[in-house]
Length: 492
Ligand code: SAM
Ligand code: SF4
Image (tube, rainbow, N blue to C red; front, side, top):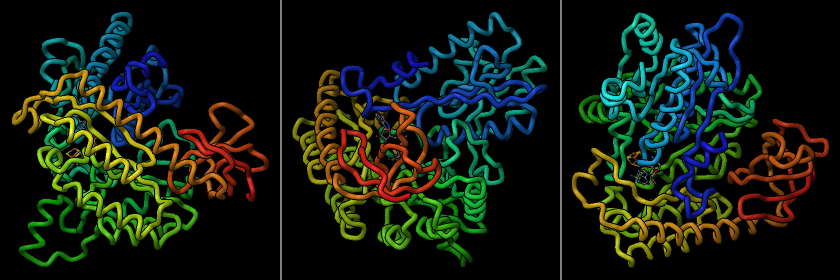
């Protein structure tokens, strides 16, 4: 598995492996006697990991338990990512490995789920005969039927994108769980059309999940001992729900034409979840600069248990590039949002970003605008990528991918180097301060140390003393590295 992870953290082959991630997760071993065994390998973003928890739940209802050993599996699902080309290549390599195992175990069923499904279904099913099942992100309720089709000797395919599926009634099975932190999906799809991005094509239109089911899920997690939930969506600030309609586009049309009774926006939802318990921390991701409102910032300020951390991807610091990326904001707008965050939530609120180096036609001067924006904001952390053209996107149709790869990589390296300096500077601000930390488990390096995160999402490591996993601790920070704060317990 470590080889695999190396393979996936590709963007930084010559850059910086930590800063540029495409994570992979596999299921734990939970199958009981008599159950068929399901192995899920999930790539990409938190949304995909959260979807795998829904898939595990749907399959458990049909007598499948999970395994972490692909060699033992009766059913193998690859939950795929298409966001950059290399992620797709990695999935293909894994399919080759699974097909070798299948030669020895002919009854094994292989399925591709998620973002690659729609685009590659014909190729994977018919031309290369690499898979038995292809299911898109809105087809997970159909998986037991698709498995049944394969058991009967057919292929199983469903890549229809729904206008209203949110899986609101499905209780996800927590995979790779530490029992303390969990993800809650609050919406699906995306109505933005960033020109570089495949998500609107692979995950469909934006839909918001019933807030009452979200609050219920948060309550149940808290009752089970969880202490932190992360509300997930491609653009959480665009969350909008009413009893009559959960599809954003249709809801907005209805609002213009007639009275819509109860409309819940993201600030309202945050407040509802924050009120589950002051002991339950709330995080959320991802925020879009065009949509994040002052109302959301004031709601964060009002509740101590809403973590002071915002992932606000800027992508580029140059207004012309932002325009052709179709991000619908410019550099000044982004700076204004940062100024508001600092004004309302203070300098200690963590802010992170995503950055794309070498988008079509980006000049050297425009790249420097990204560096100067970084200097202005001083992000705590960033996910940094070089542009990878994706078939079917607006950018592929309209622009030439004209920046040579070595230029893209050099610009990315400059961004990564600057980010490293800023992360260290931001961490150094906490030295000498006492931070409230939710303890998530043992530190990676020592059983004598615990690690957790502060409100601003920084990892804090400290000698465990008499503290308990799952509890809050107050830790005085005495040192830091680029990625971690080091401290001592002052109060439990
Ligand atoms: N919805 C989020 C947003 O709007 O910021 C992020 C979604 S995407 C899964 C995560 C990140 O991948 C993006 O913010 C962007 O930086 C990066 N990304 C998306 N498409 C890309 C492409 N074609 N090439 C390089 N990076 C890309
Ligand atoms: Fe992609 Fe833009 Fe939607 Fe994010 S907001 S998922 S980058 S289209």
